[in-house]
Image (cartoon, rainbow, N blue to C red; front, side, top):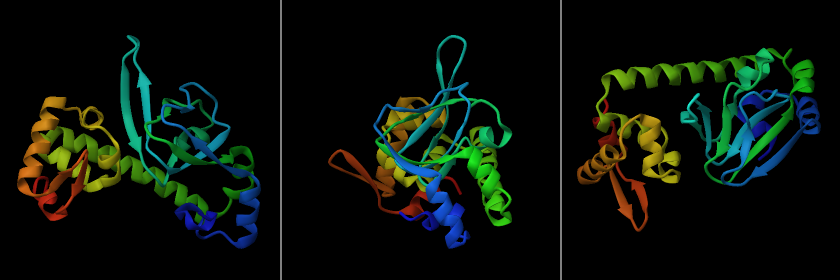
Length: 211
């Protein structure tokens, strides 16, 4: 993909795109490889362009707490860059993936004065806050079937990539509940299983579970 194909950089002039190419590189990652660790200093800005990335924290007892799964195309932990603070969590790839890695100090000094680009980053943060509010609201009011259906509706690519117990962890439901809901969604005709994979066949029926 070209840089101006990404929503963040679509408004940049050719000369700015050329400069951005000079301070960026595409980096491939394997499943299970870390992108960064909690506490590291963020000297790079990361734009996920392929794969599924898990962001998590580890509690004092050593238990993993999953904060979010990211899918393309999204900035990862950009608040740490903007605030010049250590990464508040760790990030590891659930699948093979690719990231656009940008030298943040140069990006900050040369690009964040651009109003359109700054607005794009603000929108990225706003979308994350909106997603967090949605998760909080759903956890309080939505049934398990509604949670799973909404997850599939909003994150079809992740649903196809992740194992059911991973999705259950994200939604804070048990694997047994997840299995029951998947069976219910199949019986409704919203999804089907072909071999070892699921396919979404009726998004309207999915929506009925959470609307």
